[in-house]
Length: 213
Image (cartoon, rainbow, N blue to C red; front, side, top):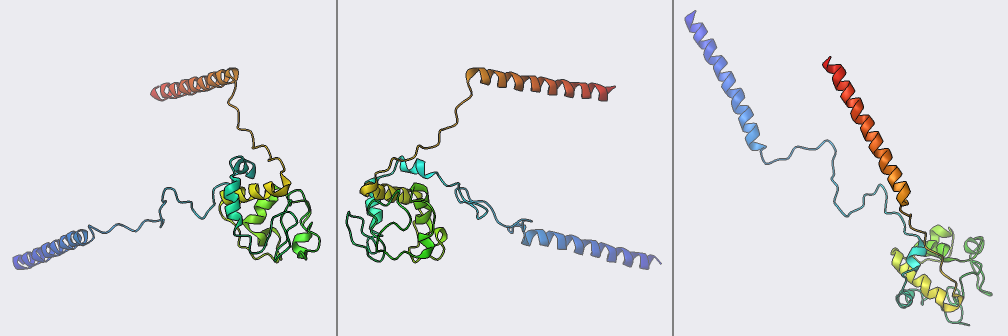
């Protein structure tokens, strides 16, 4: 009987030792491995996620600091299809002299696509910006194959240059910045915040007193 107890004790001790060794070895071999997070991925500062992009700056604000000379350089991408001098000939695309304020199909003798000529309204700074972002999105079915300009500053500069070629329309006023509250309003807001804080503190004190009773 004593022998059986001794054997059972050694078996139990061996099992405990094996379990402990297994736990220790597992911790050792996984010590330099990070646990898999529940949610994969992480945020890199300065990089926008695909959930949404930065809000588009109004073209009126971009035009306020636009550079006509820089716009002329950007326009070099367009000269294979367009002229922009007064009386210039049409090419693959229409002559672009004095385009702003004119209808989408204003150049006589040029065979515009129905997709573009049927767009209502005249060329202005905002719809030219939309056109330069993506002609195909602005007028689905257009014959224009230009991929578009992705940089807002490039679009603003080339729009400023185009406007200087015969149109010379005044730029729209940038949106007004939000005004800071007047001194009286600021004081009233501060007093309201202080009163709300005082009420909250009195409520907490009352709750603590009730709990103590």
